Image (cartoon, rainbow, N blue to C red; front, side, top):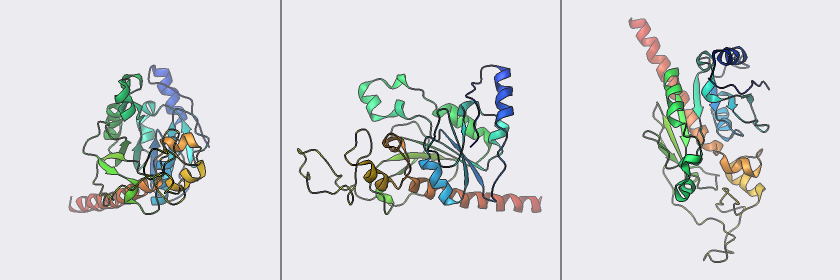
Length: 259
């Protein structure tokens, strides 16, 4: 596992140091490489890996449970040449400012709003990219994914995905009653945390083991699960991304031959 220091884009010397320390990883396979920005504990990264990508994660905080190669760094300070060494990018900038809770409490300004600067970096790369965030975030023409769209998942967890290629979502299923520990609810005592949908945010309403099962994640702590993307979401997106990448390559080859 390779790490670089957290370096802001504030001085030329720091930028130079960042360039020296973010040389592209040598590829361990013939798979296309995906840069997983704001990777956290790797829920999104795992989905892309299962789709067929070699994944490398970047996060400003240590991520000891991240299951792939990891760089500790400020995603906004990465050298463009390093970014360009990848085949695709996924970014999950902090969501707290856009969350329902922040809007309810009126304190959204207490967290960074990074979607616009992240979008500029990704667009400038010229690579296929995806930006993920919560409902309410200012994404452009996003696709909504929900756990009801994926057999085997038992969480609702709506997430938005913006991309510069077409993402086709599965049909949105009807929301079932979620397992509850609240005696005031009419379905209290009629659900099972191992069979029914559960809530994994905040304090949750199920055991950590059940939350891991419901999300399709086996390696995370409860706090990490609270923030995670189910890998099934990004496996779907990754498969479609690979299809578009293949189509772009074929179109480029056709233009080269005709040119």
